[in-house]
Image (cartoon, rainbow, N blue to C red; front, top):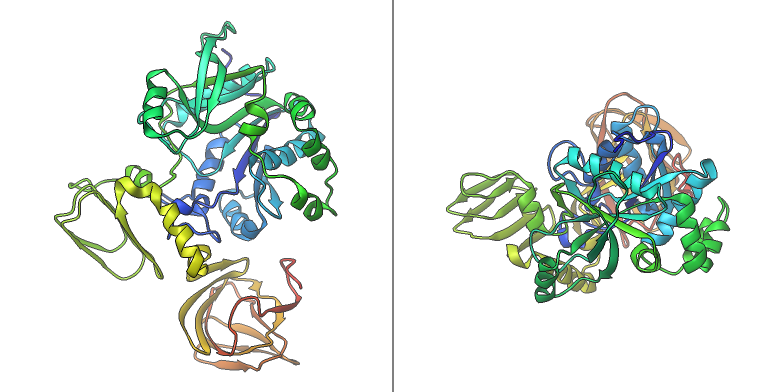
Length: 473
């Protein structure tokens, strides 16, 4: 087979809307797992982009994400792309995979009616990238023959958290590849059914799809005409209104399970969906006792465990097959083989303590970040970091006053009608109901300590009057 993708005609869609609740407390809705660095210098999203740009031009990649993650994604893109960057499509609300793929496909077909489109999740690990790239190229060749094509994964254990694909009838395209028709899809099974599927040669459904844009549109016309009509009606002025009315539906249920001409390829690409902490345990390097360790750990006589610490020192003794995760504001301890149950724990936490499932103490903003250092009745203390040449919005608070102390750098301050600068060890007081702005006009990081005082100290007490990032009220 010709192993050379026409790089100018090949397009990729990366789905970046997952919540990653099974990886709490490190993964949270404000910074889900695809935006986290579990190993190496790249987040899972960045690693996916680097992998795909070995075969696709950056400007031919369309990344679909929740609008909440816009600025952290843009920051991660800027760290790996200097000139041409992937396209970012922001969903006002998550509607599952098919609407996300459909809106990206619409944009691609407006540019290239002959496009071959590949769809990948943003949060998976692929160890054998050479085999993966060859398999992907083979899948594109299959898709050129009008097949709706999937990449399946050969199971190495009876997973109950994945869907399964039943292959049948080898397809002969005179290329020597192991290509099969898809007989049926199976939803996430119990363990006994999963063991039976493996015996019968079923594959895991990894959520990787390759198709002609024209084939996708024909399937949409046949099986999802209402959704296609709504997607086609979207423009830059009505995205929010139209998208919120769309029904939530997966590409598996909406198209793949209904298509007639559908194929699957598979190979040993050493894939993991990194769906729970046990999969992270297998991802990370091991010490002599088969422990995966990250952060400051003092460990004696513990084996086969994942020990992850982001705050202070974690000391362990005599643990075996345990997941122990400690962050600034939350700790998780469970058995490795119960890692799938973390999602149930998170659901229970949401009932009583929603913020700890949504945000970390450190929260990223387009201008930098803030970390909550202490929070009590009537006060909150933050460490605020403003990146060089960035500024916060011109804003006002109805319920609180603020006291700012510079600990590093030089701050340009707007405080009511006054504009001035303060340096290290200098401070200013922002009264309640006063328009104000914090700005870093220098080339160095600005760090301040902010002390808030008032009867209500949450983030929604912000009235914006001007903002460089389009967040005005």
